[in-house]
Amino acid sequence: MRSPALLLLAAVMIFIAGIVTSGPLLNKTIYQKRNPVRGYLDMIDLNTDQKRKVEAIRQDFLPKADLIRKDLRRKRIVLNDLIFASNPDMKAITETTGEISYLQSLLEKEVINHILQEKEILTPAQQKQFQEIIRKEFEKGGLGIHGERGRSDK
Image (cartoon, rainbow, N blue to C red; front, side, top):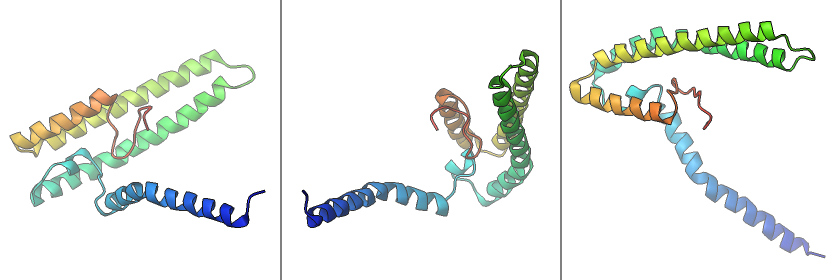
């Protein structure tokens, strides 16, 4: 039989280990809340005028992208229900996957347009930085649109 003191000591040690290991995560979360990255241009040093222009571009883009992402989520839920129905309707599944493909294409076009708009306000050196950021995201499997990831690593 283990003594209550030994069990208490073990519990305290596990608690402390949890605090110690979550410290870097907490610091990262606190940093992100103070300095949120809303887009890839937040990773580049921009002047005040560029920041103002980026905000205007985002005010147009983000609501559009958000609506498309919401539609995609809704269609994927419908697809899930169709796939797991007791008697799956292949015609409806095919139609829904076509709608999902259309929305994905639409989102991709919006993202490309957004990147081109942002690129226009950058200096040549900033454009090079921006290109490297975007390339790294493409190499990882795609662009995460301002906090949203479509990849399987998230």
